[in-house]
Length: 120
Image (tube, rainbow, N blue to C red; front, side, top):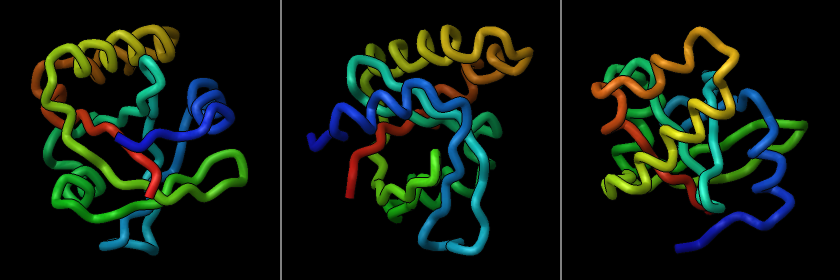
């Protein structure tokens, strides 16, 4: 497993939203939420498997995260370990707790869309 450097992890812990741009749809960035749990970076589709960006990444395609004036090349690995999915859920609830949409990110139907990001 390759991970992000400490500065990048810290930025991703604190940024509220990132834009993700997949190689399959490079002209269309989608704003999503990102969490860091135990130095692992996770994203999840609130639309479940209907989310286009999620389908692109789950199919193995690369993507670019855009945040804080940076562009970061990433690849995604499905998070199938229940403990990792649980850690990601806990972080979604903690980080986005003020938002009325936080609970939508931990619905059982979106849990299978949890992806762990690695630098590319």
